[in-house]
Length: 407
Image 1 (cartoon, rainbow, N blue to C red):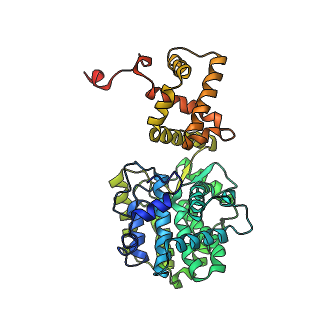
Image 2 (cartoon, helix red, strand yellow; image 1 turned 60 degrees about the vertical axis):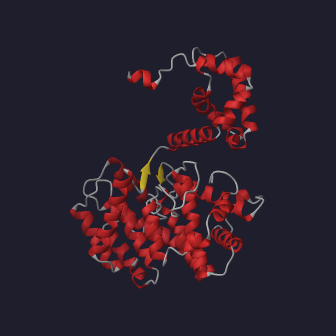
Image 3 (tube, rainbow, N blue to C red; image 1 turned 135 degrees about the horizontal axis):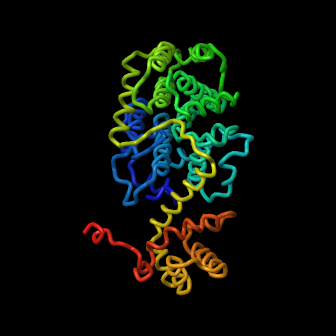
């Protein structure tokens, strides 16, 4: 199964029996525990919830996040609609996302011409992962990780109970969670330069901060007293987990951090044991997967764009290397020019030929259409960077074999 290609949702549903996706989990809390183990709650999915293999492809974090998000929504649907069908589940989830973006040019309006409901939902998930990284829209240099995707699941649960309130609920919960993370971050005694930058960015984004003056934390904690009476315990668990994630970098809590979290425990009617469980789960996951997990990751937008582009290009080439190699083998002049480019600088005319012929090849491999989009030619240097690995060995005179080098 390839979650970056069309029809992966149908493949996923065909790959698993419903009992394998729903029955292993007694309730919302046991499924939430499973999501924690995959890293989805922390924004760094390293596995999918189902234990059964998903195929031979090595999936990326983003692809695993798509699978986990869909599985979590599917679980919520079938928990309430035991006799429902897969088609009805997809339709209901689509209705939820359409309601969430009602009267707004959102991520799924761009894909209104999709051929099937499953394809439309796939496009929504792809765009949702991108949009999740830019929630602080006024401050484009601050990128959030995918840890906030679980808000979709909580909002969908609300949609099932009271459809008309889901959008308002989502916005309110997003504001509360982010503001809680802000005050947790602000409580740190030893702040890094990135912590200070993030606090500054938060304080200039009035959309999220309730009160950034002295005493603002107390005002905030008072404002979330309603969660104590909520029947949805997952809201509180999620809130605590993200606040712990905010100060998790050094794996320890200083006195000020601990004091703020203690106040939050009282507000949420949690015990010290609940806090220790949350921190322990974070530590266990981090040690098991040697992951540095952060809720907020600072990066300049341009640098982030090229980082993501390089990752995308590398993934596309790895998954299409055989077809790409065949296409290159049939393009005599192109392969000669690419080979010579490893030994000398190409002329302007030669570079133009390389660009034109590479774009012709991209037309024959559907998944490489990223290079044909407006502005896609800026990615060509990334494509060329990875192509030498596919060229005949005669063009790689300077390559040092790993075995020989060790010897």
